[in-house]
Image 1 (spheres, rainbow, N blue to C red):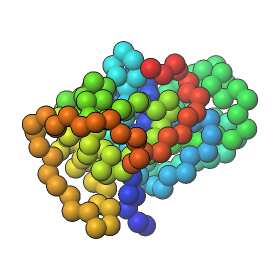
Image 2: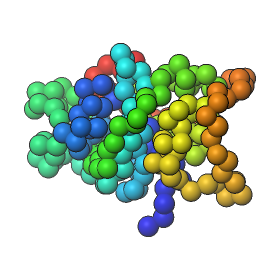
Image 3: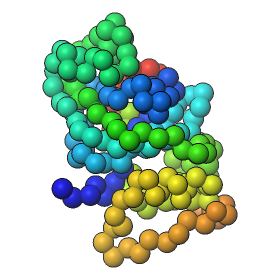
Length: 193
């Protein structure tokens, strides 16, 4: 199996982010099919009122099926009631259960303000893929940068030599388009901010 060259940034309501990092929730749900290989690093972004990167995990597998099939297979690990699940999946014909393992909180969260200091970063409504360089730019200068980058440990892009992340604040750069990122906008179980 090849090592993934990008990480999966998941936006989660703080209730679900905490449950994953505490090990109480090992399945995250999405209303559409998600195509990411096992072993993909996962970065957890907790939405309002936290608004920060709070931890990391690994994608063990993706189970895509009908909502009814996913409920039967994963109801004990998805951290929602049957009523919440039914409301969230209403109208969906295919969905994905993201099986998550190796969840760990960061020693210091990375705030939305920091993520926006260098780039015009907008948290995804559901998830977004991040390349190594895009992640490095987002967290550069933060005290948790090296911890986060070492946990996701994606291989460098061809012809790219990794550089250490400085603990000093990154110099201001003009805003640029998020060319290292790809977004997928999906409806989520809780309002996202």
